[in-house]
Image (cartoon, rainbow over all chains, first blue to last red; front, side, top):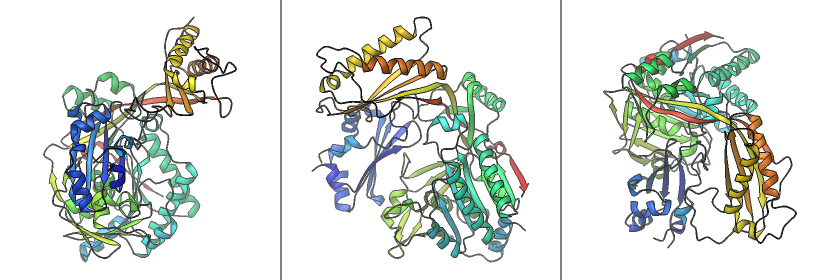
Length: 100
Length: 464
């Protein structure tokens, strides 16, 4: 099943101008558990998806919010020449098709 | 007595849960009137609004411009000023004018004075400035008291000297000092959004952890609700917890929606770093009061032994001009990388015939890889693309010269297999070249370690 068919929210945004945070939120504890326990969202997989180094990826489960947070280092600081998404609000797209 | 003195006095004499209204997460984009009126009817002890963010990028900070439209900003400020003065409660606004540096704060104050004159309002206005003196920063840099945030390169004297603006993000201390001076309306330059709401309650002894957690949520108005939105939110803060309620009856603050909001725009959902300490949310609990209200408890505050201030600065990097165009030819789309590289060379040879290579020219091809940081290489080609050329050059004239030349040669560039010999581009309008004004980049994003952060943010009091 694709992540886009399980999650209630899949979003991205800057966490400061040098980092990107990807938030996954779920409507039920069961769906949250299913994704949280899946190897599909390990740092190495995320790093490959976004073509960054695995050490620049942090995955934080947040059960009280039925959410998973992924934090990435931005390759280009927000607003620097060559930036393509100043707010970082459209970097969630690669996650949509991840198979759980 | 003015509003802050009156509220402090009343709550010291007769302690009860304190009511705080988060009126807007971004003042200047509209404050829905029905929810604001509903909030006023609840007799709040403070009305607060955040007006800025670093998210909007470096150009507003560097250039000194507001992101919001002047008329919309005036409408929101007028609504808040009239409401707060009617109830005689403090109005607190942080990060004035989008980025909170001197030009942003001054522009905001000019609107506030104009509204006061037009409406016949008289009040004590407190102003907290956030501009960082350069000599102080140079001394701190030489003393090793400045460090980069999230991998930002070390600050240099050159960057300090060339920044158009450098602000510090003030915490609760300066707000408390201002509110202790009997203030009706407090307008601050660049500030932590939490300080807008947490300063007054912590002066009254409400627990700092709860006050800061509450502030972190209500600074976004009703964004923590289902469905999230920009209507005002009310928090009732007591010694053991706070209760959240949107002032729009359609919006529900549920335990999960509120908990989820704590992770918004944060790298760590359990810890929020502030100048004076850190908020620990690992034991936070969220419980439904009813289907529209949630009670929050458990946040802890840890005072820092090494207070620091976040610095933000922007430096001008040139003048920006762009070319806006589209294409629908499959061969052009298939070969766009080679075509754009070849045209860039043609342009360079022409505009650098008698001038140095003093500009950058970039393209983004929307439909292919204009948006994503890592677009997969195996996607089928799109039927249409949007092609944006962007030049940054030392002068506006030079940037315009580059994009105008680029437009002509990209339009008529011949490439192997080309069928569309009358032109490669579709322009939605002409001229398709647009001068966007000065471009900036963040050149300061650092922490300044200082034993007395409050001293960096001077207070002015003005009688209107």
